Amino acid sequence: MNGKMNIFVLTAGDRRTASSYYRIFQYEELFKKEKIGLQWSIAKEFIDFQKLKYFDCVILQKTILSKYKIKKIAAHSKNFLYDCDDRIWLSHTGSHHLFTRLRLRTRLRLISSLTRTCMVPNSVISKDLEVFRAKTTIIPMALDGTLWSPPAVQNKALRVGWAGAPHNLVYLDSLLPVIRRIQKKYPGLEWVIYSGKDPNFSNIHYNFIPFQAGYEHNIIKDFDIGLLPLIPNDFSEGKSPIKALQYLATETAIVATPTTVIREILQEKASCLFAESPDQWEQALERLIIDTRFRKTLAKNGRERFEERFSLEQVFQLVKNTIIN
Image 1: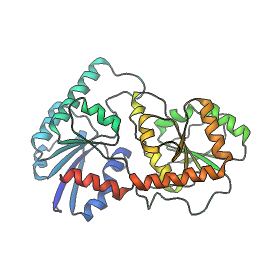
Image 2: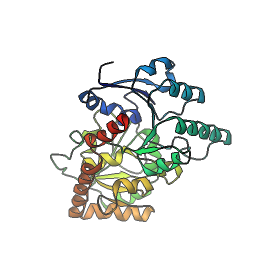
Image 3: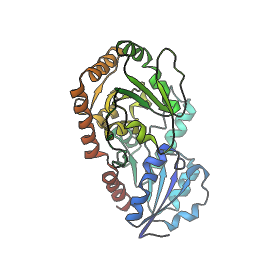
Image 4: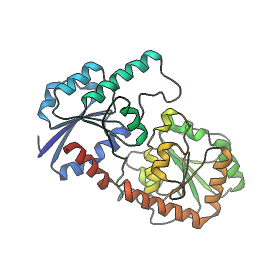
């Protein structure tokens, strides 16, 4: 124990796990400045429940554990919180088996009843948990605005980019026909895919940059236009993609699929263009390619939107107040 307050976080993963990093680990230095001690363990591996009674606050991050473990954690916690940044109780692509759905609902109801509040990044997840009578606190996703900043030098050629984990390449795959048409019309553009896996797309040209942890900001800040496609479904509807904030922070003009949460984050006409059909995607991209002034205005508005709501220090105050209060 090394602070005026000490918290223990049962995480979904380690520092390399995006969800755990952006919801917990990126605040470590700010916790230290506030003399708040932070210890953690991966939730699924944790069994030393007696240890929790020595901490002022225990946070279960994202993982939906067994009823036995949830009860054990609650019984040994002075102040039990839950944090979740995705609708992990839903399938990414289809629907869970009936038994799985019932099991998840039972566990979510238990979490909702035993935690003081559930910290969530958006209104969609908040409404989901309120069905189980959970008290929720909206704490947006955040980034360090000094690290994620606009580029000092503009590119010579216009650069269109997509960044994301390999399992999200399916979203980009849906845009390939549009990309092919745009590339035929505007052959001088640079196209970049930044991911942990080369998708080996055929009939389009692009520069693949392999993912390197801690280096993302240097790649994304060189995008002039950022692609944020999603496949409309219940899971995507509650997704708060960190990529949206990365584009905003680096003054990257955005074209995005208008899910409920994306609308909350980006606010069309202020900081992005929304597109649903292939024709709308093509029109939006063409407008940003052709109209330099509009593209730069959109990008600057995006940075302002980021500073208003998503900067690390600002969101940390919400995190700290929720934990303390």
